[in-house]
Image (tube, rainbow, N blue to C red):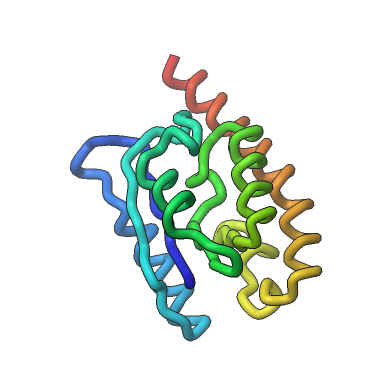
Length: 145
């Protein structure tokens, strides 16, 4: 099964997940598959993944071994490096592949079907990107303050 997860940080009605949905659907069309389900959530990336209702429900009740979870950007999982790393490691340990479309080596559909290559890529990229997401969050908070 193939699932998409979209998240926006604000409750403001004018902000939508339209860009994320178009990106996910374009990727699916280009790789000749259809999503079994795409879910959407409005919650800050500062809220840890396990505290997000829609994501937690998807992870606990829907995602199974050999499923694929596709997100437009790795920071849709969160802004805290430790939280992102923890989520990706847990999903990987359960046999669930995560495809983050903003990361070149994590979005090559055919190559990601090779388990050994996927595992190598995700281990390297997760750590780098997670720390970048946390830095972006810290910059954003600094700008707001």
